[in-house]
Every structure is written in C-alpha cells, then in structure tokens.
Length: 273
Image (tube, rainbow, N blue to C red; front, top):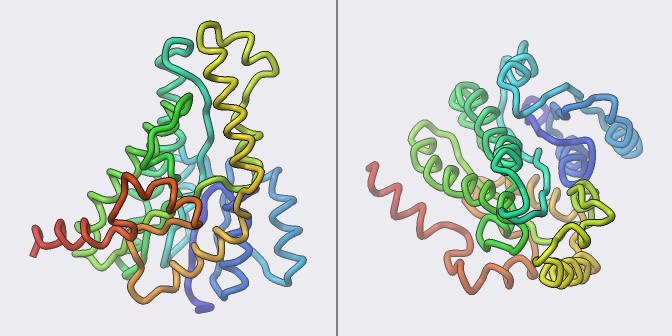
C-alpha cells in the first residue's frame, strides 16, 4: 500500500481532514489539497498526532489551471477523493441566478475539473474515483435548492460515468453522508438576520432551521465517514453507492431502494457489453 497515491480535495477540515489522516494511517501516500494552504494547521497537527505525514498542496477546484498545477510532477495516482464543497441555504426568489451558479461551480464543476484531470492517471493505475456527495443528492431539501441541484448533478454524472470508466479499468463510487458534525454547517454563511430578510418565507425558514439543528444534534463524526471512505478505497470490488449511517439510509430509503447502486450499474454496464 505504501506505493499507492490518493489525492483528496477539501482537507482543511471536516470529512476531508479526517479522510486524509485515516488514509495516511492505512498506508496511502496522501496528497492533501485545499484552496488556502495557510489553513493546513489543523490537518498537519492531526497527522502529527498519529505519526503520519501528508503532502499538502494548494488546489482551487473551480480553477482548471490550479488543478493542473497541483498535479504537476505527480507521475502516479491510484485514487482521487472529491470532497471539496460548500453548503448553501437560500431560495430562488430571494437570490440571484449568479448565486446559484456559484454553488454549481464549487459543488459540481469543481468535481468535474478534478475528475477530468486525473482520469488519465487513474486509467494507467486501474484506480478509482470516490466522490463525497450527500443525501441532498437524492432528496431535494427545502432552502437547499442550489446545493441539492449541484449534488443531484454530481450523482447523475457519476452514475453515468461509472460504467464507461469501468471499461477502462477505473471504478467510480459516491459516498452519501447525512448530518456530519463538522465545520460544514458553520461555513454555510447564514447571516445573523437571515429570518428578518426572509420576508414571506420566514415562518418556513424558521421551521427548517429548527429541524436542521435537531438533525445535527445527533450527527455522525467526520472520522466515521472517513473510515468508510478509506474502506471503499481498499475494497476489492467497491460499491457504487455508500450511505454512511443508519440515519442516511432511513432518510433516502423511501426514494432510493437500490441502496448500494448495484442494480443500476448492472443494467447500464450491460448496455456496453
């Protein structure tokens, strides 16, 4: 395993940080990326605490030139974990189309930029693409219109890419957490006076925020999600879809009966045989 390289995006905190440390502990050489390497302190401290090292590199997933610069000099890559993303709370009437487009740039096109750039390396190593999405990529959620649209797009793209990539020896998987106790929620960017600005949507938004606080009171840890990502990286036959908790499975169950993605993958792979 020591010769295997994995590139992980969005490693300054949360799931990305925990995955970088867990992968390094499992013997992977970890290229840990983040937009601002000045924020690498928490990652480096966590790695040092358990006696591992990670290769920290700057990477803005929304900038193809930044992606190419990050990959420069990397001759072998066995896996990529697309984890970088940003939450967003809002509703269409009260935000601009440019606001929605910005959410898509980070959460959808950022995944595409990275995946497109690494596919030649992954074909050479018969590697794998693992993308952290969300239960919000299966169930559309109130006041998460733009975020869920981006995650739905990622899910559809990866589900479509998976059988094509498999013909070239590359496996594709998505990881769908529910509520995770990380800085993700605090980074959503809700203003202190968000309810005052919500106008006719204020009662609904207040109820939504109350429900969300309750969901995150019993959230899964980033380390638990990371352990499942690392297990997926090492799996002989990785599943297409991994739901990371009982809560996530219960949440999407009424809509998504094919919980591990095997039925869809078996059907669409047969189209290419």
